Length: 203
Image (cartoon, rainbow, N blue to C red; front, side, top):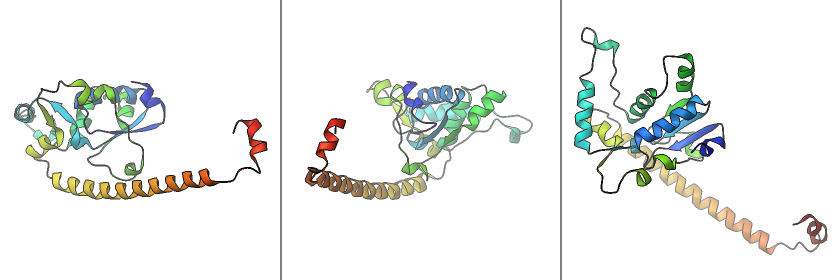
């Protein structure tokens, strides 16, 4: 679980198909250990339980407010990225300096904005729905819950994601063509002049 995060200083995690609480707990630990973590596609995170059940739970959460001045909190975030952020905050000692610095190392986004669309994205097997939730259990996609409780950017994020995927497919097709050309050139290259020098070196 930890080896996934050792490779680089800033880790970009693709939230699609991950369970909200399990991913939050793993990311929280890594933040406290000093890693910078970026979670993208938060709208595709998953919560166990049906949409109806989760809407009821959210309605109960909205009722929790300061009686005399609701503007002082608690605040009820609607966007998937902020819901993930708040879930994770409960797993970090955020009122201490250590906890505040850990929270400062976290970034969460809906969709995959630049520059993270060009970076390698990882998954966390210990938090994947396909590995951690029984196939016959109900589940809720966080973006659908957010839309039901007042988040108004579902269509915009879907539109931007569609545009990004078209660009990614074009980039990947070009990359495959370049790799094919390179391998063809390597196969047809005449190395007889230098093979005597390269052979003792193991090439």
